[in-house]
Length: 181
Image (tube, rainbow, N blue to C red; front, side):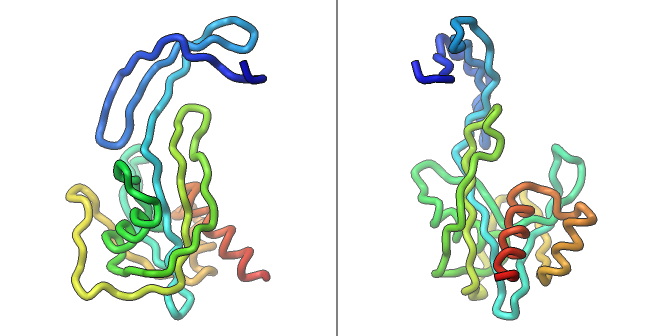
């Protein structure tokens, strides 16, 4: 057994939904004791930092039911089975913003909440946006409004907590670092 490894001895599948799966695992701990772990299984996600030719960042504002409020975020979405993150990134960019790109750069990937979920998120940036000639329809249950903000305006949204999610805050830190270089 690896240093901190927890060996699964039983898995109970609780829920299999459109976005997540929930399971409860019984595990053996490194000291031989047992414990329960509530786990969310997620296919992974991508986010894109879209920067226009005039150096504005394209955001979407949408209602987030778990928070009971709207947030301003960079475009993002979940991976479909077998889909490569780059393809997901372009698809989400097109569906949510009406822009496309052929020039994505991977910045990083990270686990969003490793204490209870296996979701990995890939963050890309593009400064090569082209408006779509024909709009692409997104999810039927997704309603978004576009905003194009300067970095200073976006930082004000962070202070006001209108931008208040991890991926978008990461994007703001990344862009601020680039500005200082």
